[in-house]
Image (cartoon, rainbow, N blue to C red):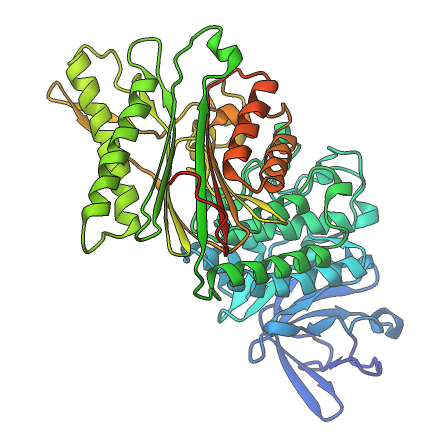
Length: 575
């Protein structure tokens, strides 16, 4: 910006002395009328043919500026690119003419990035995530209005000043119509599939929808969304796989924003954000604004060997159990999927040992006064179940075990219903779902090699090609051998607390249902949830689910527990 240039509404730069400009990392004094602004120059971008571009910051206000130095007034007439935005977010974006394939990291007085800030926190609340996303949405919409994509911007490139101000390096952005070639600086996890030439679509507004979804994924999980070329750079897990304690309700929305197919994403980044806001109101009504109500909770459990499975092995390794206390209204529902190997052991014995422990613990609970907490009850069932299975292995096989990982065991879903809350202990890959009139949310995560190793930081591009990626990493029946003796280890299970509302329906199931309801996983869940929504009686719903899995092939044992929640008595099927 030339000192002799006068542009209405724009700042003018003063020379420190005749014939010389202030140099890099020094102060630049700008004046507009009687106002004076002191900026620190923090980066000099490569020279253009018509101007030199600087980045500068006002350290008092934390505002970020792009300064154009030129001899011609027409070159700087469009340089009023500093925006003071809501939530103390301040962003500056250059015009398209300044853009190119340059990857220049911001180098300035700011010391903390969004990556650093998120890494220091264990878990953000939905409200905190929305607060940051609101700031990022402004950035996205400014970029969209100027035909820019943020696909190469990562949390390390977004700067935080005193935990209040987010800044982004504008020179990482590139124009939509200039992104016809796959860029070397694309970011796996944050760059949409079209950035890698996957889906045949050009870069567009939907690319920023994907990016905002990836940022939401990152803020919840604290991890880069796991993806690779095999997944067409769409995410392979959901945010709650990393943070099971985060409330349900957003996983499906985020996966929609990050869909491989642009036509299936939200129409705009704002539409994605507004759907999150709407879901947040549902989350608040469930988790924060509970009114004390007298709920009626009824359940039914069913199991079947599976017709195709029975042709090879008539033993049913799935086991189910339910119990009800008419005095307190408390209820226990257990679903287990037995696991066994060719070497020895039997999954049906393992799952039945867990059911036996559940019965003992329930009878003990009913007789106790005062009552132990629901968390204690489900945790005790899990721990004692693991101990009994390991004791059985020890007495049956002694030390003649070729590999302590090669053992019988069982998955476990142990749900305790008390008042308005379901307390659920889960280990293995048997899923549990919360089904409302509008949505179906998976409560649990799978404890298999792919999921847990990806969460642990192993590259998903390698794990997804492993033949054993679906192998369980956690189940009951886990032990170690010490001094020639089998010793059970502490089971590493997930513990969930789900507030219940009238109209909720819960499904606890083994993979014999989800794997055979339909070959396409999403359609399988749709078929399952439609059956549960259609029925007024959990017993009829459970029987229909058994039929659905058998019609789909019946290639595995099937175990289900169906629970309905209402405000009115609808008949308790297990009294």
